[in-house]
Structures are given as C-alpha cells and as structure tokens.
Length: 285
Image 1 (cartoon, rainbow, N blue to C red):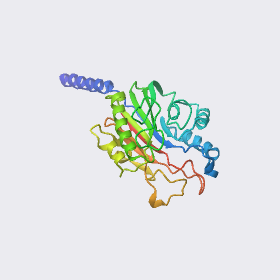
Image 2: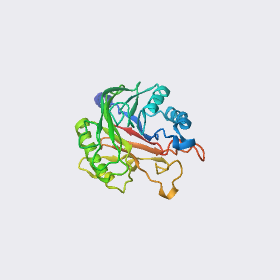
Image 3: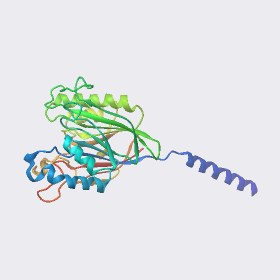
Image 4: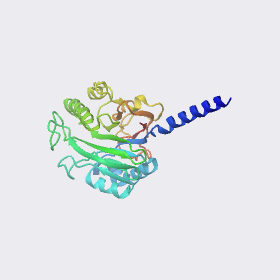
C-alpha cells in the first residue's frame, strides 16, 4: 500500500512538472482594415465624418495588432492622437517618409516590445521607392517583429496593399512577400494582413496559399466564423451579389486560428466606417 502511494505521488509530481514546464501559448487578436484614404469626393463618408466611428471601433474591439491600408499622413496623425494605447510602424509609400499612403501596423504598447520593423516596396528594387512591374501605383509592405511581454514569444506581422490593376505586379508581390517572410521570420510564427485587391479566385491568392512556403487563409481554417463573408462593398454601393472578400489574414502553419470574423462597416443606411469591412482573427501559437 505504501509503495503504491509513493508511486502515485511520484507520477503526480512528474505530470505536474511536465505541465508546469510547458510554455504558455500566445493568444492575440489581429485585424486588417482598409480605412479608405481621406477623399473629399466621398461626401458624407469623408474621413471627417467617419473618423470618430473608426476610433470607437478600434477602442471597442481592442485588437492586439492592426494592419491598416490607405492611411494618409493626416489620418495617421489623427489615429495616433485617438489611440494612445498603440504605437505604429510605417512610412508613406511615395517618398519613404510622409508622402502618399501608408500601410502601417499598430500594436498595443502595453503588451508588445518592438524588436524590429521596416517597410519595403513591392517592386524589383524593394529597398527603395519605386513602381513595380505593371502596377498602376507605388505599393509597399510594412513588417514588425514583436515580442509578447507576457510569454516572451516573438512573431512577425507583415501588412500590405496590392495593386488594383497590375496582374503581374500582384503575382510578383506575392512571391516577394513569401521571400521576405522566410528571411525575416525564419521558423517563428508569422502573420500577413492586407488588402490584396483580388478574391481567392485570382492568381495572386493562389500564389500566396499554394507556394512551397505554406500560408493558410485564416478565414478558411478558423474553427469558428462570425459576421458577413465579404469585405469590399464601396460604401454600400456594390450590389450584394458582387461583393467579395479581398482583404485577408494569412498565417504560417505554426499558428492556430481559433476564430475569424468580418464585421459590417455599416453605421447607418448611408454612413460607413469605410468602403471595406474590417476582418479579424483570433490566433494562438
């Protein structure tokens, strides 16, 4: 009897030690959100009338990291002032400073330590400002390497906005991003967010998801889904049957997707957060 009790105690102790030694998983909420550039022609949906609702959405949903697209410098200043809990990495695409649209990544300052980060151009010369392939616009990708202050775990997040015209530019941009993720993240967990200006039917999406370096579409592999199934709606002007999901969150195989949602950007029948719906995913690694 005594021997059994000793054996039981030893086994219990071993199991406790094994459990206690397991690293705590990192759990984060990631959002990708094209906030629409500040365009006076948007009339009632101009940034001046939407921005307070955008701030309120981010404050309420409180994502850990947010990849945004179409952010002009004036909007970036507004976001910084309204979201003091967040820091950001990013530059304007037209000069590598403040001109043109940013593809910034905002992250919670209380939760993460910035280990590294930068912006590169989606072109044949990614280290300098330039137009790539058959693109109509200069395009960029911004990345960060963050360390979770709670678990010590590091991960990489990259945020981008593909060209809306150049088919070859989108394909080459996908290949460039895959190379950069390999280079920057190595074996660490990695997340790619962005407005890819294509649905899953297009070649650029297939390049992202069927390359030898596997990236998973978070929406497709999520254990649970909520919300609508499209992201672009053009301030509600697109007919429902034409609305598509062109904003994506991709993850490396070592990231589990617990839940994904796409929230409707409609505030009223005529006022919207943006011409895109924000897309979020709840991840663990």
